[in-house]
Image 1 (cartoon, protein in one colour):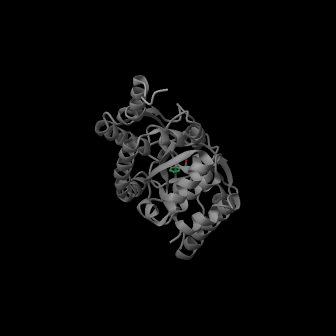
Image 2: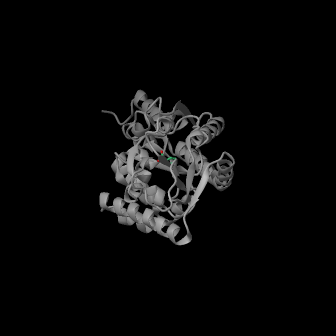
Image 3: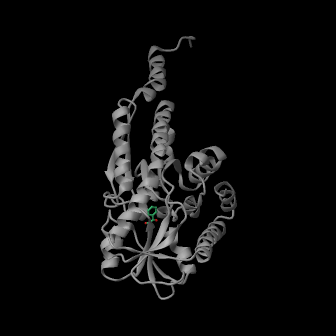
Length: 320
Ligand code: 173
């Protein structure tokens, strides 16, 4: 054999190294939240920006909300690569890994998590256990609340049936509640039919799905740190070129920078709830302190029990 490389091999080699970087890729995205929620409208706004600025590099095709993939199946869709990208909260995919629900326990911003090692640990776990790449967090700095249609005087939910997701399940059960897990899309009907006496939800969003019509009380204080994030199928992430990854990361940091708007959104929502006639049930200072301590204790105990391997590490990096 001569030492010369046949022409067609040289051409193939050239194609193998160049076109991947130059080709535009389109990622298919879904959301675990219904389409008319603010989480999704903000996500769609971000996608529009990614697409406008990403011509020739990367595009995102938003397929839809739970009508496309049911809420509690979005994690699996991201894991298997049925879709490339998902907007979700960890509570929607605890079926894949119990650690998913620990993101609500972070006491610091996502910007700080990127610096203190928490972000790296999240990615290690998400890669290993769910074949996911954790891209970034797009909701923070707001709290979850208990909403009720029956008045309570103290944190005792004995005799009450409360709609939950894994976010609230252990805490409300510890307070004596009977719980029923539903996707957000089923809460209105459950309230309307009187199947539940209340539900867990963030301070923001109850008007998006008309739940204010069926809600009498909000219990203060709020607890945990509301988490909504964007994750990707790990193989889809790995297939991106360096330039595409950098582009997506840059756009995600821009999206995270908008998280500072959540504080204002929460303040407005609190006022709007009062204006629509929702009364606040407030515990006294000592009871509030116990209530919050209980929320945190119960949640961490369960994360650590379910994940003796990573629970303690997450707790260390998520606690101030
Ligand atoms: O459905 C839920 O109550 C829930 O788990 C959740 C999590 C983050 C934001 C909004 C809702």
